[in-house]
Image (tube, rainbow, N blue to C red; front, top):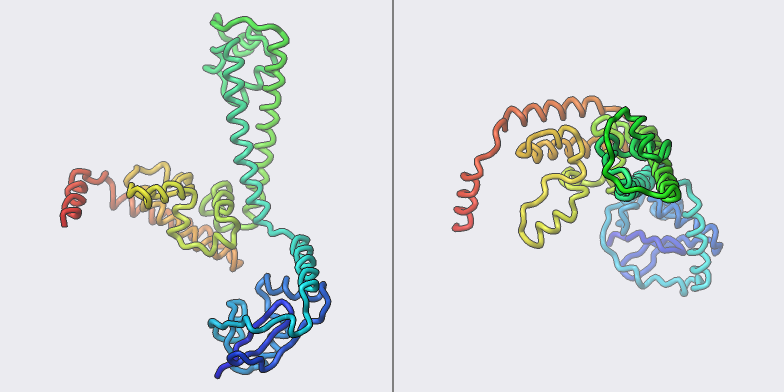
Length: 354
């Protein structure tokens, strides 16, 4: 019978059936045990595991231990810590120490990108809400301004002048406003809100620059293929670069379209062809009947780029981009005209009859 290698929180055991053949117990020190468990959580092999195997043929129960033997299923519930004088109080101390160790570990660089892109989304939402409120409020006093200025320029004119006559002079216009009159105190309050909006725009620009500068260092191949902001958004949706690199191309294609996918599964509506990948210029600038194929091609190249960024060191972004652009040209030549919807309806009707 091939023995199984089993690792518990208090030691490593070599078992044949329900019998312990050999073991290596951890020192009863909470800090030392916590360090070993932290190494296990990071996917590393312990010296006790290597020593216990000693080049003999064994089976293992964790994928992490696959270099030592073939993984398999094994019921190790018969190995009790109480039988080896490791009580619940020691286990509690070990878990507390383990939490302290893991929380103090250096944070992965892609985690900063995930938080930054989520903060950017919140800033964009705040800017849109405050901009809409500013238009509503100041529009009572000067409704025509929205025809000549937008977003930051709109807010900046209000901050610099406030008075509509001064703004009309600044823009070099000749018009008579249809707005209502306002007290100076009301205009001062609106100018303060406009200043807050400008501050948000400035913070948004700083955050966008931070993302552009840093995501290229973490995922250079993905950045070359998809651009920094779309790359950061893909990493954020996946929960990290490592997670993104583990996903198949079909999942990458639909990242961000989860609600549409579930709606398709529940009500049998048409499935989505793309998720956030739609933001790539090659996708959203193409005719609607080509977007599905282009999204699929882009997702395939993105899956390769993510794996290279996570597990390799070579820079193949330019090659992947050229291959993707060549594939886009093939799709455009192959499908120059929209599909015949009448023929497709007849095919679907015939399929339902069968």
